[in-house]
Length: 368
Ligand SMILES: C[S@@+](CC[C@H](N)C(=O)[O-])C[C@H]1O[C@@H](n2cnc3c(N)ncnc32)[C@H](O)[C@@H]1O
Ligand code: SF4
Ligand code: SF4
Image (cartoon, rainbow, N blue to C red):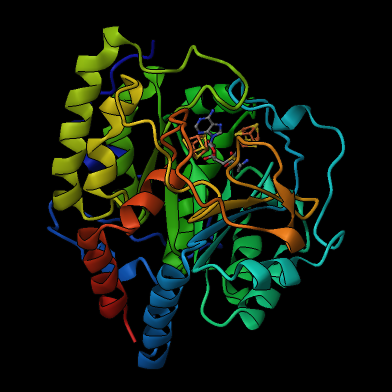
């Protein structure tokens, strides 16, 4: 169990000063009030692009999905997390082995998340982002990375190619994060890099997985993100990846989890940089108690996984269903509750009217 982090002031979390070459990061004062982060979730968009985004959403709703495609660009990874076995894979398909533009055109989602394995291992990513943007009409593209291979230059190349946000995994403040990933100096690298990226206008979102050992880090990460000009999105630990149950939040920690979630919902309105919906967060304790209704409406319909070989899986954890050319939506709810990943929960949440209005408001408020 990690020690509780005591934070008297979020200014304590300001990372070390950047090297002289980098522009100064925006150091946000903890009491500066609401920062209007929701306006910064999206790139500035012209009115025409906003309308195209809205039309695309309505069209995807009417055709019945997919809303999101998680596109694994490689299985390879240079970390050694004990809750995910991708890093044990020695060979992987890669972009260029199949026609990924044709695959995405066939699926034609509202958003694509580049993932892996570790996506930044793939050197063709900026080119891929550019091609996807050019080929799909309106599409929102994100990427999730552990960040160790990311530099300011690589991030800028992706941003210039049209990437809409970079998610960087962060489960702990401090060296525990290095230990979790098996990468020495990773936390320091992230905490130096992120303020530089946000200073250059890149949307950065921390991806934080809620698990038994990091409950005392979950809320402080939102404060830390704010001092760095970044946002945070929460997800929940699942043992479905490789059977490791040790990180599930057990009944002995249920009360602590409840108070963390209550605090997160409060901080969401106060800090303004918590991307997760309250709808999603409120269901986190029920997920860990295994009391969510056993019906997944997202996998295979609203959410699909595209593997590095060009195959389709209903979600990251289910087996391959078909090649992309033969993709057919899963028409029934799946009797499964093995995860409450944000990609599942937020996709389900995006179908609720309240969340839809929140999304529309965000698009509307995005700068022109
Ligand atoms: C599979 S990783 C791929 C991207 C990249 N390698 C990374 O870790 O950021 C995508 C996300 O899934 C999260 N993840 C991995 N294993 C998980 C598990 N067992 N339960 C919940 N989230 C998990 C990671 O922390 C990361 O944010
Ligand atoms: S979670 Fe990401 S960083 Fe960790 S082993 Fe899996 S792919 Fe690699
Ligand atoms: S709950 Fe849905 S998204 Fe999660 S593992 Fe099961 S089928 Fe996949």
